Image (tube, rainbow, N blue to C red; front, side):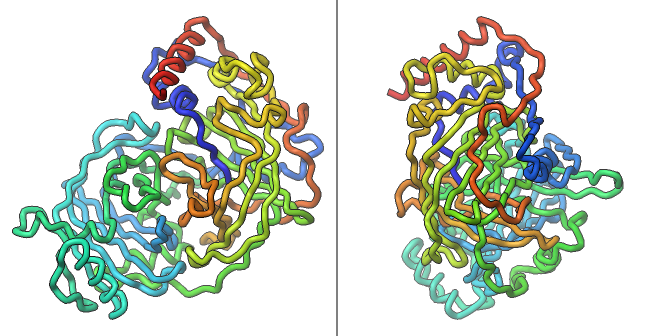
Amino acid sequence: MFLWCYTAAVLVLLSAGWCERLPSRLVSSSPVRLEKSFGRHSRLHQCHYMLKHLQDGDQITVHMPPDIAGHWVSDSCEVRSGPEFLTRSYHFYNNHTFQALQFYYQDNHCTQPSYTLLIEGSVHPRQASWVVRGGTEADFQLSRVLLVSHSPAAAEELQVKLEQSCGLMKRLDPGLSYELWADGSKHSSRDCARGLDFSMQELQLLRMERRHRHGDPATNAEELFLGDVHTERAQRRLHKPSGYQPPLQSVKTYDVSCVTCQIVSEADLYNPPVLPSQNERPLHLYGNWVSRRCEVRPGVLFLTRHFVFYEDSNIWEGHYYHFSDPVCRHPTFSISAKGHYSQGVPSTAVMGGTEFTFTVTHMKVTPMDMATASILNVFSGDKCGKQGSWKLGVQQDVTPTLGCAALGIRLPHTEYELFRMGRDSAGRSLLFNGQRPTNGSSPDQPYKRATSYQPPLIRCISSQKGSTGIGKEGDHHFRLGNGYKTLDQHLIFIIVLVKLVFWSI
């Protein structure tokens, strides 16, 4: 649930994008491998196993620059901030041109089509991203944007928006296509797509993963990750992606159980996909939930999450494991938080969502590489545990110091959350919680509550009774890797840190 606003200094120092560009001798460290012995918490072994074997243990390969030629489709009804409910069907061709279809809906299950956008243009992958490790930067150019509405009500609503934004005088009729923008046309200076907060900035960041199933090398699946969309609609056209949207599935390799993939792949501009209707799933938080994949957050953060909700109380725990790489193999630090949450109420802003209020009252931090331990020891005063006491792999309670100033965390901390439940194509329960603001702020006021979601968590244990405390000293044993620490390494961290502090004044 919580991904706090870490200070710029810590983000830059911990980000792989920054570290990769330094001389290797300055960034060598001794990472703590995520191999814990849960001891008396052996019932959590399943959750631990799932975190260690993300994507069901599939082997992941990434090609850079990616060959994205092909047909890619959504595997679920997606939610963008606003909210907007949509599915996507993108064709990329060998000559670098593309044709993208974005299907928008009135409901959160994508059963009532509202309108469709057809976007044509070209995209050229360039160099490895300096912002998001593992991603590829790309340039794109649009040539045409067409609009088709699918109901009289949708056409009327669109008419009002476009008249206000670009002075559109044509009457919009359902089932007919209208040109919102075209490169080189006599009306190219009039951009009616702007009235829909339309942007294709997502094409500036690409990542293609190929997953190989263990024991069956002939079976693989391909997923295409495109750049994230800004959570503030007014900022979409200015946003340079620093994270990803839900991945698109290759039509050539998607799992046969993905009904949504098949339906979306067969749709066109005039015949939008209509997904199977389904009842709202009741929200049951109780139990343990873990990440399905290595997650990426704006600000060069890679992490996995583990949430625990207790059945006999409104107490929750959150364990956040941060890494320096996009496959979550090299840990940097972890946070274990504990607190309480309110009873949920149905959201009036986001169809299918439930609103909660979460409070953090206790927290522990574990540095998992020498760089992080060094940074935590740089900060003076008792504002993040005991000054100068941080050691590699040793967890420290920062509750007595009311959080950790080095990580931008203050206790107690309250956030206003949004949740919903779903199922994957295999029928397994999924838990979605609110997307973090792109600008790095915290949803610490009701009006800041999210209207879209983070990547889902999957249930690993159905129920959890009685709070066991969070990460007590000695409960977790780490195997330390070999490495070294140099004076130059500490100096470079301190110098950059000081510069960042002065820049922020």
